[in-house]
Image 1 (cartoon, rainbow over the protein chains, first blue to last red):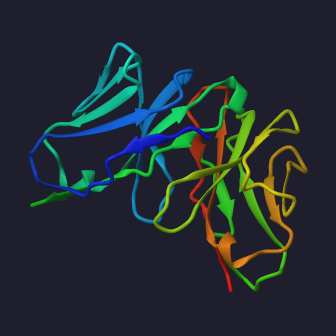
Image 2 (tube, rainbow over the protein chains, first blue to last red):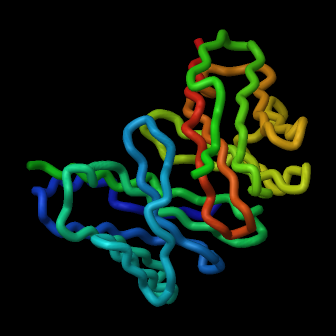
Image 3 (cartoon, rainbow over the protein chains, first blue to last red):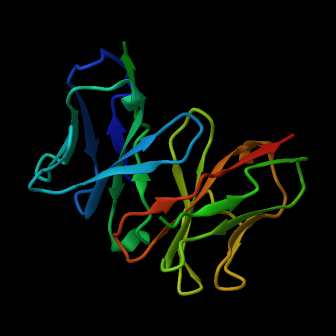
Length: 112
Length: 113
């Protein structure tokens, strides 16, 4: 199964900071891309889908570069509640039964 | 807002015993999945299920594992003879259409002693 790679961190940032996470994927046929958030011992929860044109949801901006097979997530004005693990997730292709392929996650700790 | 539910939240079992993990997906979802996450590791795909058939399974999903949708609402994962290395969080997920967002249940923590 082809891989999704992320920097595991941890990223320790003060409240109000801007932080960026990066992710690369190896399957060039991948069709859809997501950022999920996972709190300790909880289920992954969708943060946002990632589109080729880039998309923004409040303080969160996601970018996809298909040529470089690279996905990014930018969090502006970090809040304490943003502390979590951020999972880069790729849906490879119809040949995979639409099973999600997860990165190991990047840990973020936002401090007062 | 509808949610995926899973029972039990925590299951402790002895090695070699059978366990059944249960999931109730969101009612209008048609694609169903089981994933697992060993403590400290990434979420791993086990099996996908559509139209009452397995669509794909990973190398983890060996003959000890089976899935069923017995009554049109529940979706179960059975492990016939548990091993120590089956200890993990098991997440059920569902989606309305292929390539749609998958929504995860809260998970069942399986501890094999």
